[in-house]
Length: 177
Image (tube, rainbow, N blue to C red; front, side, top):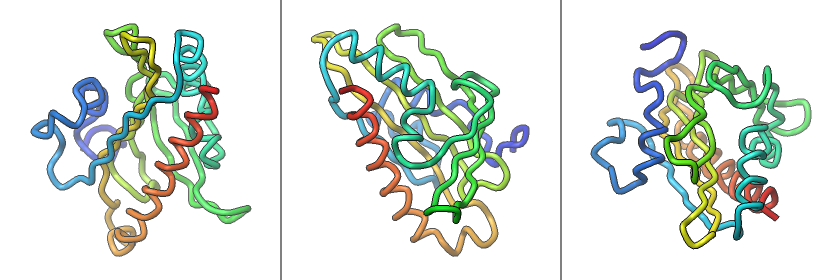
C-alpha cells in the first residue's frame, strides 16, 4: 500500500491509457478492467472544450456525481464525488495522481481511490485529438472492491460501475457538442 491509497500501482492508469487495452500484460492482476475510446467530435476546438471539461470535473458532473474538489484536476487534488439519488449519496473520495501527457494530442488526468471509497484502484479520463482531426474521449479504470462489506457487494459494484461509465460517455459527448 502506498501513502493513503488502497493499492500499490499509483499512476499506472497513465501508461495504460497511453498504450490502451492492447497492453494487457501491464494491467494489474485481480482488478476489473474498463477501457473505452469513443469518437465525440471533430477539430481542435472540440478537443480543447472536452479537455477543459475533463480537467474541471465536467465528466463527473455530467454523470450526476456532484464532485467536490479543491480545484481543477492536478496532482494532489482531492475530490469527493457522491453516487446515489437525492440526499442519499455514497461518498467516493479520490486523489488526482497525474494530469499530464508527453503527447500534446492527449489531455486528461487519473485519480486513485482513498480510504472510504467502495473500491480500490484508479480511473483515468482523457481527450485525444487524432491525426485526422477526430476527437476521442477515453475512460480507463482498474478496480476491485475495497475490503469488508464492499467485497460482498462486488456484483452490485460492477453494475454501478457500468452505469457510471455509460454516464461518463454521455457527459463527454455533451461536453464536446
